[in-house]
Image (cartoon, rainbow, N blue to C red; front, side, top):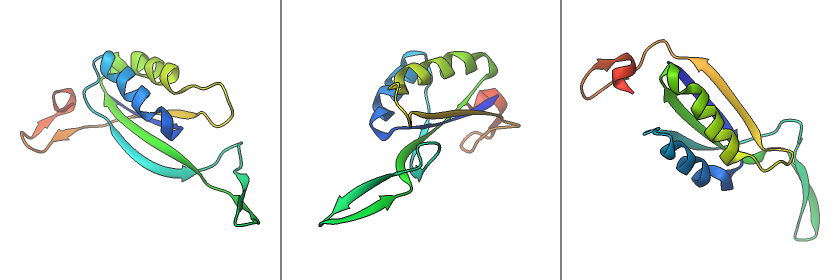
Length: 112
């Protein structure tokens, strides 16, 4: 099992959810986060004063999937969340040792 974590632009969340649903992914967690990478923030004007925004708003999408769903999941997120511009984000894939469904106490892929 793998945990796929995608950091994407906030306005791409709904499109990403639709893409994942279309390939059979039934659950995901979305968090509003802030951060920066090579983009390094930007300058904005507020009431005539210029200030630097170091941390940009992003969305963190987490999906726990079986090993056989990883490639399809990555492809779906990549296609849905890409704008082709700086700041599109990243996808991280980490191993999941175990998953437990609290209601039934199921373990492993059955709990997904």
